[in-house]
Amino acid sequence: MKEIIESQSRRWLYGALIALPVIVIVVYWFFCLEPPLTVLLIRHADRQGSQDKLSNAGEARAQELVHVLEKSGVNAIYHSNAIRTEKTAAPLAMAIGITPAAIAAADTTLLVNDIRTQHSSHTVLVVGHSDTVPEIITALGGPSIPNIAGNEFDNLFVLTTCHCTWPRTKLVKLQYGAASP
Image 1 (cartoon, rainbow, N blue to C red):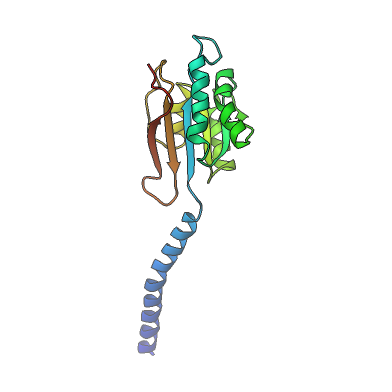
Image 2: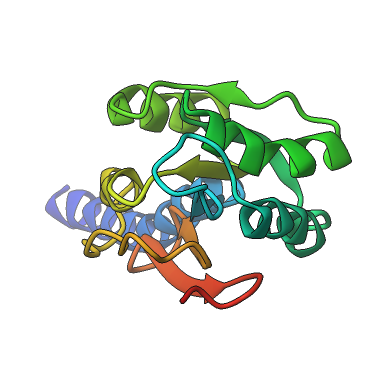
């Protein structure tokens, strides 16, 4: 009788040792089915002095954004409630047929929660400000970056978040349009 119990225990142990890697692979595969979240983050285009409007260079930069991102698969566009962010996002939104969402610049938590719940596997453009873009990157799990200088308008940050890779987030810094002074 003791031999039968030992034999059954060994079979159960061998079965468990074989099943465990299979279960781990299936769980990993399940989490990797969801495409990554890609968030494109920019500061509004060049502004007219200290006014809440774009300069001629800013309007040209907003048009350049269409050329750069029109085929990127952007599914949603967010901007703050400032006119300069709205005007930066408008040409791309019109070109790809998306109505942008305006969220108060100070409400980073609302923005990040909305992106995660509504667009978890999409490509999203966020048009923010020199101080909010770094906050949003950090809130989405990206690395801490310094605030953007007052004369920098050409940065394009690409933050990708994926459940399958380590590290889970990857940040790439690009530039678009004319070089900032």
